[in-house]
Amino acid sequence: MEDRMKYLALGALLALAPAGSGDAQQIPTPAPRPQQQEDTPEAVVVVPVNPARVYQAACPALLDGRVTGRIVEPIVDGACGILSPVAVEAVGARGAIAVTGKPVLNCGMATALARIATAADEFARQRFGIGLESLETGSGYACRLRNRAAEGKISEHAFANAIDITAFQLEDGQRVSVEASWPVVRQTENGLEEELVEAIATPFERADDDPARFLADVHGAACSIFSTVLGPDANAAHRSHFHFDLGCHGQDCTYLICE
Ligand SMILES: [Zn+2]
Image 1 (cartoon, rainbow, N blue to C red):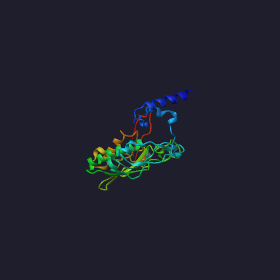
Image 2 (image 1 turned 30 degrees about the vertical axis):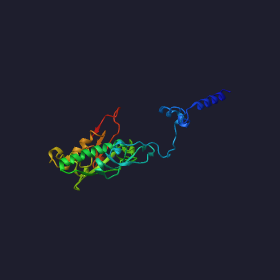
Image 3 (image 1 turned 90 degrees about the vertical axis):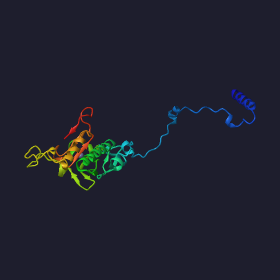
Image 4 (image 1 turned 45 degrees about the vertical axis):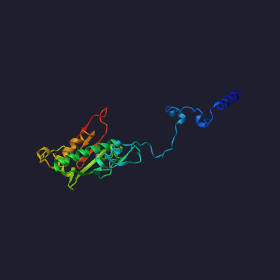
């Protein structure tokens, strides 16, 4: 009965409306729902995703051009894996410095790699008067234990949280490799690192454009960018390359290893 009364009242209102104003647009319409009501549970739409996609996030350094590459599928492999891997092709402004190993890294490592490459490019210009063409690197991600050992702790490489750099290629084709140009201050007769039998000139006793000084520059700068820096002086496993990672040391991840 009440409903019927409402219809009658509406009919009376329409009859009173001025001529020419009887179209639907003149009928008062409810105010739009406030935006916040879109967040009510019934408004949530669940979009099915590829089951292989566990989680992926964008990488700011990829968006602003410090890193050139692409986000690739998450890697889940037992204890190893990376949820938002970046396949890095180049670093520096507009992809200025190629990264030959096309490493798969997490976003933090890709960003830190761009920082050390930019610093190395600057060191190269200061010492050799020419910039960097490319970094020779390993693959970044690798599901393995530290130092490729058969047992022990899992490597930061297993989380795409580490990179190995073997050499720096200059724009004129000159190549500065860690193995050939690191200023070796320890020589051993039987391969044991502890048995120091010969010391040769430290980097600071060499000419300004000596590749050893360039490598020492890069190693030093890396120690303020990465949480772990291992070079040939660290141990025999790093005789041929720099290992940089962003592993957590100490209770709050601020302890640094620079060897
Ligand atoms: Zn490594």
